[in-house]
Length: 238
Image (cartoon, rainbow, N blue to C red; front, side):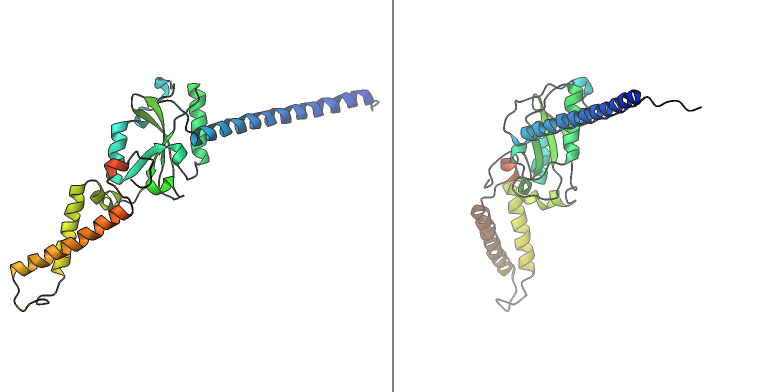
């Protein structure tokens, strides 16, 4: 009922077992090494200034809802006072999910993506923040492909809050409105016993000069400019 133990056979069995395990471990290590090199190369492209005006995408595999023209991007940047700059100027952290999407795109399109662009508030190109950046890649003829969006959405009132910075006309209207409201807050009879229309407009003109002076000083001192002039500028004081 009991068979003799063949030591040589047992030895070969153990050898084959360990060889298979070693082969699997080697394959896993090779895969991890390739993934690490791939992510390092993608990070280098994201942080580098190299890259042409377009990437060789297979247009049949692109999702049309993620394709945007530069004019559409510019309009959003101006309305919400955002910047659209090379990813090399972005000081935040690119999430792993975005890296994964880049690897997926490169795999299915059989290409190396370069020339990344990011749309985000100005401060995200200087300091880390939690607002929502959008990562794009150029596809040629002033069109860009949206790869990934992360972070939180913009404040629902941001468009209204940055409306005065869209152009000089909007800013003047805001200063006029603020001056008018400030004039209404001045108590009656503060400067004379008899209230008159002339007195109201004199006070209004004084308020307007004060507020306009503050706005002009703030703008020149901090080097601020209107949204159409900064949406694609890499300089801080614009």
